[in-house]
Length: 248
Image (tube, rainbow, N blue to C red; front, side, top):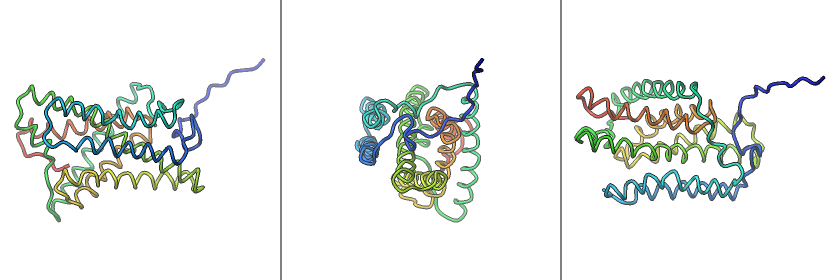
């Protein structure tokens, strides 16, 4: 009599091994282009009205997801997994780790180079409670978008290096992890007065930890949750403590 054997294999990264779908190099280019378009439309309108801002932040994750759904119509949802209690704990854990590590790095960097505060954090300090709540709510789709424009290029680099260039999975993953952290830091240059050291070292380090949240769980919901918790803590700490806006 045959006995069913429960599988305990950990989930792997999607697309690079053709599971649940293979994405060609050209289709990956469309996905990356969509990520770029999503970012440009987010920053294209200076001082937008609240309605325009909400349209921008909602479009931010929708545009790359639409491109991914086109590139892998039968497997695009693989970047999301069911959120379990353990995943919620991981969101909190990675957020705490990120705050502690990047705050330490930020303090060290500030001793040897000029740094700039996050303007969003400074703006939140001067808001009334109603505006503050609406601003924080708007960060939810925006930060999900930030995860997608980082994780999708990470998966694209992993896929191309393994499938096209025959790199080992480990070398390709390490390269994708570091490259997308550098990219993420560079995207924040306008936010931090084009401070290259701050963006590449401090913001890049934060991105490494947030990407690690995805790499451990293979679930964008977890890295997005950690990102939201992290930013809310950084934005609200000066309000609660009555101090200056943090520089990360």
